[in-house]
Image (cartoon, rainbow, N blue to C red; front, side, top):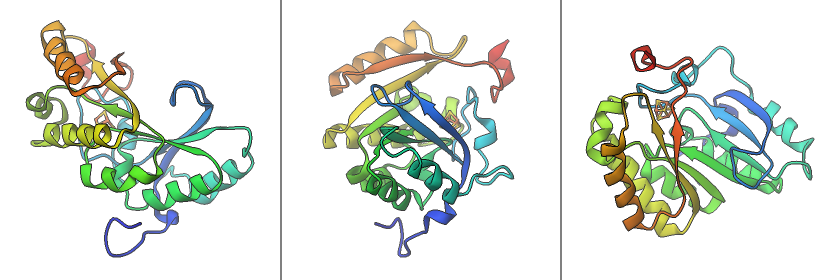
Length: 214
Ligand code: SF4
């Protein structure tokens, strides 16, 4: 499994953080979470600003994650790849394969920024938490990136087509996503067959655009 012509090693996976145990990041499963470094978008309400650059001085080597997981075989159910945007990294398929071979389920938190890469990850994924931020036209005002909405909604279509179990999440920011915005979004998701859609409150601590917190 490659994203290009060369299979990137798990050694190149850039991880900015690890949560050793959680019951909320993959519903119904006792999980650990690795936070992958880097994201192509800059959502104004992002509270993971330290994960947005592709590199960081505080990275955790994959060998440490592997050792952590080996010690928890039979104790944890799953590993969740979160971020940042995990699908940014070409080493992700190799990492998922390795974690799967250890007997863990795979969860993925993604904003759907790379639909082609997501399609190639489908054989490894058990569950996805997908951010759908708005209807496609509303994305650039949130992410700062033209075309980001089309990518996210293409990712949603890929996951629906593949029958992957998922939860769609929409962040509600102060003065940002009101009932007028939400209603057509919820209708469109329902028409597409999304069964699990949750609204999550924007965390205003360490938010990328502090004016949203005031
Ligand atoms: S897609 Fe997610 S990680 Fe990337 S900037 Fe937006 S909220 Fe932050």
